[in-house]
Every structure is written in structure tokens, then in C-alpha cells.
Image 1 (spheres, rainbow, N blue to C red):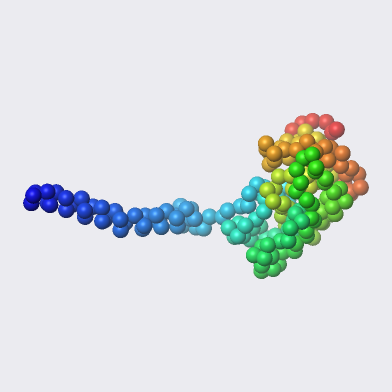
Image 2: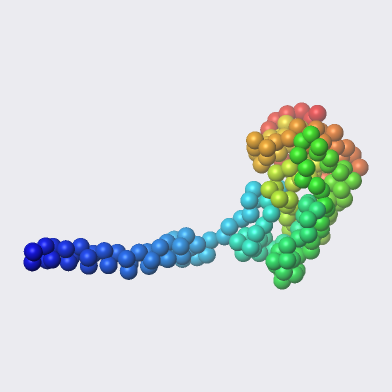
Amino acid sequence: MKLDQEVNQPEYDTCRTIEVVHPVIKQSITVADKLDSNGEELYTPPLNFSMVDNGIFRSGFPDTVNFPFLKTLGLRSIVYLCPEPYPEHNMEFLKANGIRLFQFGIEGTKEPFVNIPEDMIREALKVVLDVRNHPLLIHCKRGKHRTGCLVGCLRKIQRWCLTSIFDEYQRFAAAKARLSDQRFMELFDASGFKDIPPCPCSCSCSRR
């Protein structure tokens, strides 16, 4: 009986030690996840973030965790392509950093009821092409369809071939790619915009 007590005692002490140490280990992992090997803060870009051209970026809807990253871009403007009011915490970030908001309320409907307002796309393109608004971020909810259409129309102004325009669109839309979006980009008339230097095309193909 005495022997049993002696054997069981270390097991109890071991369990008690693990119980005390475990929260400390969990906390250190959480902190380490936010730092790099040099102990510097790590930034989190918004969903589907990418550079479109010099001074022009695209993404999904930014959240508070993305604000430190966005601050590094030195943004002057945001082109927001959804009809819903901009969240208060996002507005506070814009005001604190002197960023101007341009909102173009394009409904995020699904096929076969997609109606992309060309007049709104044209107005948004005027903002995007005005270098006084750069650096600039274009975003909708996921950074796929509405943002993809606007960027695709910008590529037509930059004289990209349709193959490259569609390839770029599909990289972000993936399985959610819409034929109606691609049809809109194909039929979009970019002749009303002043020619700008073409952005390098990612493939060799003739203009369509």
C-alpha cells in the first residue's frame, strides 16, 4: 500500500506540472505567429491582394487586421465597388490616414441576373486613371467579379489582348468565373479613353 502511494505521487506531480505549463506554451505560440524570425511584426494583406500597375492595387474587402499592411502602401484613395455603406471602423482608418473614398455601388448579383452598369464602370475608371488619386486600392467584397471587371476594362485601355485579360480575371475568380463578366469585358469600348502606355502583356498574342 505504501509502495502504491510512492508510485502514484510522481504521476500526480507530473500532471500538475503540465497543467501549469500548458497555457504558457499556448500564449507564446500566439505571439510568435505575429512576428518574424527577427521579432518584427508581420503584415496581413487583404484577401486576393495584388498589384495591378504602378500606384494601383486590388483586393477583397479589407478588415482591421489588414490596416497595418495597407498603411505601408501610403494610399491616397480607395475605389469601393459595393452599394453597402462603408463600415465605421474602415471609415475611421481612412480619416486617420487621409485616404479618400470613391464609392460606386455595383450590385453583387449572380448569373443569370448579372447587370454590370457600364456608366458606373466608366466613372470608376476615370478615378483609377487619374494619377492624382494614386496610390489607390480597388476592392469589392471578395476581389473577384466587380473588381475583376473594372481591372479587365482597365487592361483594354492598356491594350492587353483578351487572352491575357481573361487569364488575369480567372486567376482571381477561379471556379467562380462568370461568362457574363468576360462578355462584358470583351464588348467594353475603350476608345473613349485617352491612350495610355500599354502594361506588359503576359503572353504573346494578337489583339482581338
